[in-house]
Image (cartoon, rainbow, N blue to C red; front, side, top):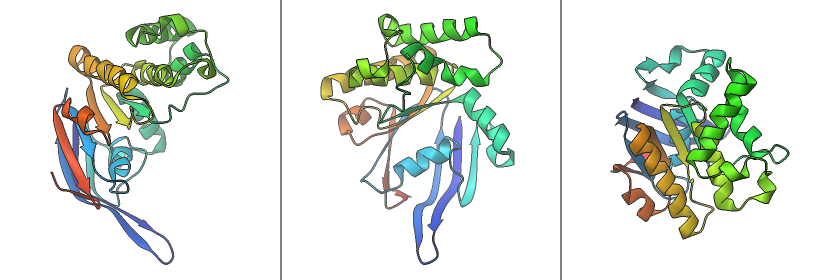
Amino acid sequence: MIRLENIQKVYRTDTVETLALNNISLDIEKGEFLSIMGPSGCGKSTLLNIMGLLDAPTKGKISIAEETTAKLDDKQLAHFRNKKLGFIFQSYHLINDLKVLDNVELPLLYRSSTAKQRKELATSALEKVGLSNRMKHFPSQLSGGQKQRVAIARAIVGRPEIILADEPTGNLDSSMGNDIMDILLELNRTDGTTIVMVTHDENMARKTHRLVRLFDGSQVQ
């Protein structure tokens, strides 16, 4: 589903050159749940951003669902992301002025769907994460765990083949974190969604199919 070949990422300023990723090669199978771990600053989020086509590698090749993305222009990349990928962030990234249902509908605004279809899909996504009774609430009226559930609903509303999750349990206590992890595991198990998760939590990582460790931009396991 995702193939990285000799990925290198270098950040340059006028005086400093920083090697963020060094020759990462990785194959992620369809339906796999993969964890990425490593100390802060080791390149985990950079790698996830490259997988999510939010950043481009300095060298190397990436293909997703057998399509080499280097050939796509910005508009095509945006369309590809919207169709194939769902994103979950540690800090939720919800829009406080929008109700929960409207937040979940957002990715569908970039598709040729009607308002009725958007509402139906968003309602279904919220039911999957157990928040059908909070659709008319605003994010400020929700707990941290509920906000992350809304973020998951937004990520899955377009029925993506791949979910990329950056520390999805990082801001939550252990109980809420386990609830969020259970939702991700269920999505992987029942829908066959491919999930790549960056985490600092060894216990969460052990629940996934495979663990990749990074250190100073290099893969060490």
